[in-house]
Length: 111
Image 1 (cartoon, rainbow, N blue to C red):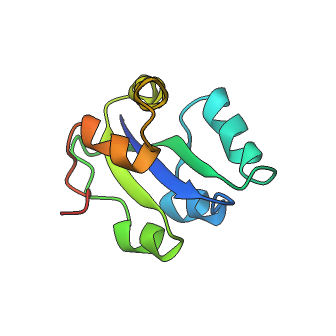
Image 2 (cartoon, rainbow, N blue to C red; image 1 turned 60 degrees about the vertical axis):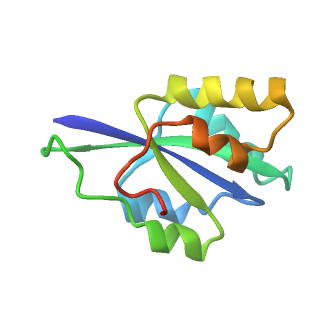
């Protein structure tokens, strides 16, 4: 089995039903806590999600469905990359969406 991880950026409440739809889960307990926080604080958020597949190269996440919830996804190697991105954005006083360009490209990333 291969684990595939993405980061999702959005604002307001995290669309929890997307976890079921994508058959994914928060990449760590800290990411699960961030999802819970979105129900109390209506601000920008970034959540790392994972799912497993028998395929080495994941055929893709449902980019358009995430976009229908006002979210954007970007591929990453691990949830540690998401933590580094949060720190970099905070240190450089840039928004999470602008900071996505720091992450490696992924097949499902928007053009």
